[in-house]
Length: 215
Ligand code: AP5
Image (cartoon, rainbow, N blue to C red):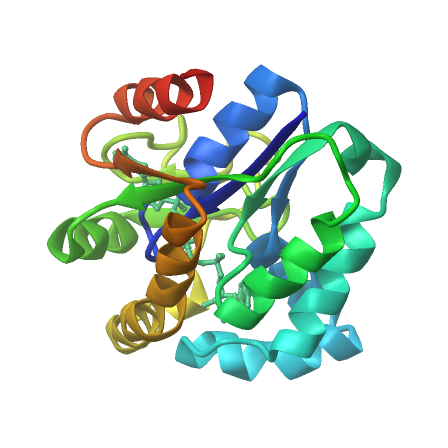
């Protein structure tokens, strides 16, 4: 069974690659960022708690995130495998995910770490536009919408994400180094880690990711 985790700094292409993998493998793409943004849009209790933390580039508390993922992985569509994008982000989240997987004898998690230098991340995030209605993601030069400013899928006006300001991106990069790089070390020590070069066109990165997971 394919149980895949994508780890990488903000803007490294986790969401882009996760969608392609989900299509190829026919398993759900579970993005904690998308789940939280949906809660913010719907103004749920979770959304109200998460919105200010996300806008500043901080991390939503572990207990909330672990609860969300526990519930999501219990849904029937995750029974045949899944791709996690944005979880785990702390060592505690990684340990809890291991505990959730214990007793599930269908193969170990495979963890892909996308390697992208900071200057490229800043350029990618500056060019990102997202659809606030359906969540589609564009890059103004690499994958622009057919009609400038409008979502190809649903026609809504595209926006820059509220956490894509220079200040928030700097905070998110700092958070990745401080809280998520120890997760990379955690999976390396368990020999579950695949380091993949995330530079270059989307399809080339995808071939590298797929090759690691096939091998
Ligand atoms: P999340 O949504 O997970 O944000 P992130 O990790 O900062 O990642 P991004 O969504 O910014 O980027 P990505 O790596 O998916 O790149 P993308 O494919 O879009 O989380 C948001 C927030 O939620 C967090 O900051 C935190 O507050 C909270 N949160 C979420 N999970 C949490 C957790 N587990 N615990 C605690 N808090 C949590 O690509 C970026 C751009 O580049 C796009 O425009 C894309 O089109 C383009 N692009 C992608 N690949 C390429 C390529 N190869 N070449 C050219 N352009 C490319």
